[in-house]
Image 1 (cartoon, rainbow, N blue to C red):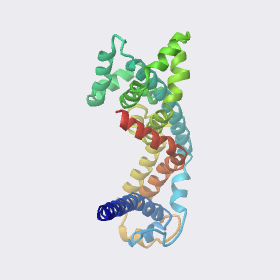
Image 2: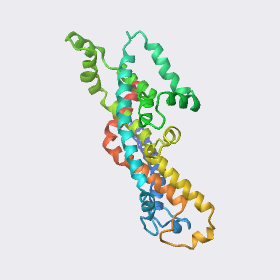
Image 3: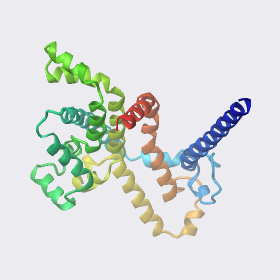
Image 4: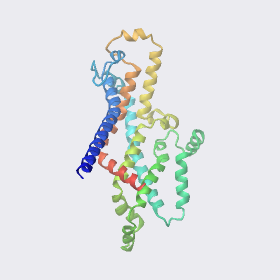
Length: 301
């Protein structure tokens, strides 16, 4: 009996060591690239060309950030990006949750047909040209609403939320109906409070998508006033890359620190930090809901 207990303890210790080592490797694999890019972005760009830059900057400077943030257009694009992230996330999650609730009702006559259409959009798209023509006919080209209206409903969020709502006890809804509650009241006062963790996950996914999205701005909203932060940062990188490619590399290397000490690689890393920083700052506040929501969604799914 004692040998059996010792064997179980030994197995538990081995499993714990394996989990600890695996998680440590995973955390290092995730954090190291980000820390390395942060160190590079805070280092003198020309000095960074020497390589061997790991966790800390060798020649600390904020010039890379000043270079990117000195353009007034960046701040206008930042306002557009923040606005589209907030409005796009709220509307997408609101309408996706409403549709998920409707599709979770087994007596809804179009349940299978609508579910098929929602899932179909996850795998197939009409293509850029038909979508562009459609947006043009709807007056969405060079219109801020092009960031909001096409994203009213997210197929992923609908399926994600519907799977969880279907697992909720029907007795709660039935008792609310007996008390005279209407569908909208049941949704707002009973369903939504019970799926807060799932909604938090949907908000985070949608907000990250809206924050990082630049392709729709490039294709459907080329107007400068509607340009997003990611698109402006990409334009600056392209401009700098073009300038460097048409400049003698030895000339760049001898410029040293100062107004001209900037390289495409330094700009690329600095752009990554600027783009990721808001998500990194917001994530700790949503982490509790995020972990709970993913766990519950995985179990229900």
